[in-house]
Image 1 (cartoon, one colour):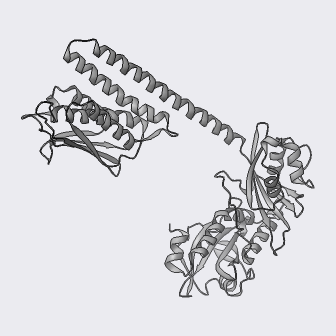
Image 2 (cartoon, rainbow, N blue to C red; image 1 turned 90 degrees about the vertical axis):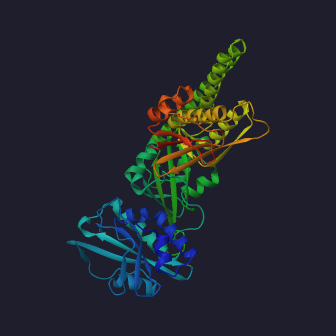
Image 3 (cartoon, one colour; image 1 turned 180 degrees about the vertical axis):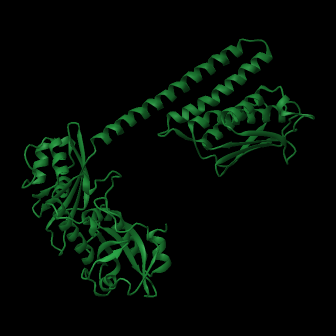
Length: 489
């Protein structure tokens, strides 16, 4: 489905500022659709003047839809909807005429001009499914009255308002709690859900007739509410913004939209949402994340202790073969410790494996006896912890194997070898290649029959732990190439 920006740039003469204005309307027009009990369609005038392109569509959550299909990106020729033509040409809300019939459903259509500065840049069609219309309750009358005020503001260029938009992903909707206040900030109407929210704050009695700012100040302690300027601006509906307040174990988001249908401030729409349970879950997640990071930190410390004990033991053994085996164990433990150290500092259970690969490269070359440097090409990217730990072992073993067997200490001289570690994401797979310019594989080498412990570890990790495959062969540089391919799922 094409975006508003794509449709506008392809078919209209709207500039970047016009598109930004329309995008700000679309960011808030779920509220208008819900208050109107109607579908909204944004029609953009074609640059040739032959019709309109649908740049946005919103269905109500409070009533039946008038459109069963998505129409974004479709074309409406001039003359097909005369109300849309009238709204664009005359710059006024057009609502006269008989209902339309769509799929045996009567639909009342209104056309609202979208004004920016002195120009009408688009038209919003408000489509009400009349099968869902019944004798309106007081709640519905206030919804429709507020929707009417907002549409007048769109037609006069007073909506959207400049300044702050909602910053909360869990911003309240109309059904969460609806309040209408007058120009002095006194509650004119409160929906049952809004009354329930304030009852949880400790309200006894009704909301209607109350000065919302004073009432909230009495119910909410200072440490649980914003500064006085923000509190007055939001609860008095004098600024288009939101804030979060609470009392005891209750937390709620309050969002205000000032109403200026004729340019003068007549009051405002205030939406409330009880986010107590969401905030409790947020606290649990923060605690859980901190616990997980602490576990990774302690595992890293324990692994470093094990590595230190192994090094101490290696110094006390006279056998060169046993010392070498213990040093290899130290290196393997160290590679796992690096992963846990990175995870202990991460907010998510994913790690930037490029950083780990670079640290492992330095670890291998620092302890190697032959003069070798490791160069990384490509990016591993972010990997989940379940994949990072075995992959770190694989990278360590392949690099170590290349250093030990590709560049024997004797006869190395001053020549520096080079190992290239290449990573590439290919769709749902990660491809890893280790290329060295060393002496290559011995004649008659077979991976399946190789006695190397390191290669046996790599093969097991790649195939059993990571679900991938490993191949070893000659490198174009004359050395050895190891290819690993593992799924990212």
